[in-house]
Length: 181
Image 1 (cartoon, rainbow, N blue to C red):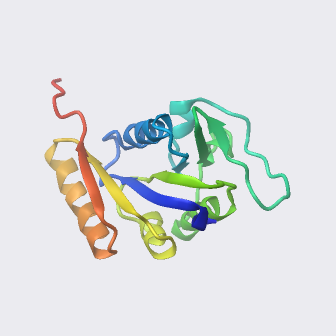
Image 2 (image 1 turned 180 degrees about the vertical axis):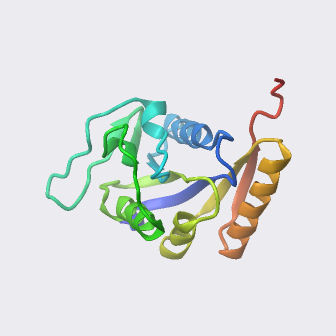
């Protein structure tokens, strides 16, 4: 299925709460607005944010029992575990199940031809990130952080992980850099 997708971009962070989902969503919306065929995959199985950010939608259907039709909103094709289960259901899965779910979202969702598929990854450097690096040809990653020392230390580790698995880091977004509390 990924043959019909020209660019796979991973939006990642070393730490949660830095605005990664906001950056991923806005990047996808900007690409769609610019005329690119764009998909957005919420790969944060434990804490899917995309349905909250883009609004609820009917549960994705499966016309043949094998493929899954993505949600289509705002010029995007979207898939999220948040569209598949009730909002208050906890996903109590181990690493291999998480990676398998994300792989299934890539392979079984009827994305069609896309210029970009933007992945909103869970924070950190875990199973999902490593599985994607091993199983699909990723164009590059975009790292998101905030200026706090802890967030910066974690994003450096995320960059080291992407360097190690040979996924180019396309850029770094320092979010909330002028925020004064």
